Picture 1 (tube, helix red, strand yellow):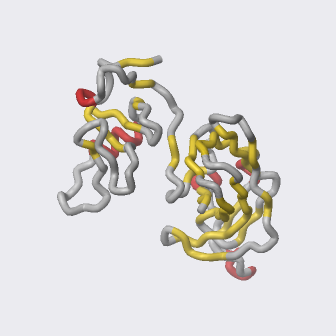
Picture 2 (cartoon, rainbow, N blue to C red):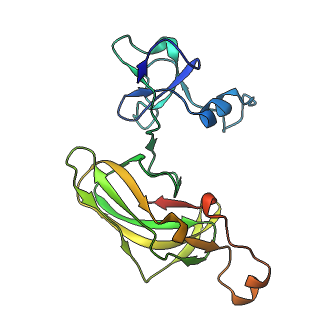
Length: 199
């Protein structure tokens, strides 16, 4: 379903130039009051064609500034940025990936059980499907100020936009520490809060 004349006053321009309505979380974010110097303030474009410093078209935009020839879609489909982690329950989203070999890390803790958790990526243009491989070399680190554990390696042979399909998310289990004695008081991180990062 598409519209150009209803809904919240702002919309979102995706990385490929398509425009969509906002979800509830984004609307709440835009309605939050920020100090002028707060770096967490949302980025709002002054025109549809304005680009970010890294030459991307994405960003929030006032509905009235959407060109007449561009439809505003009502969709749950959202693009993910490579530099940010995403929820393991975000199946169906799209991520832009250049050619390369990437580490797949789960955030939140260093004791990780994967079980049958997995995901695949489907190229939007070619329909080619690629899947990461589990790694036994599970390096632990800090990413985005959180504990992180490398669980997979992803080989991307061609640049493109990829649909993410996640499977058996409930099998992924994470605890903050991998020390045995900490299990007495540390709780498992709620599955719905788990995020992974491809980078």
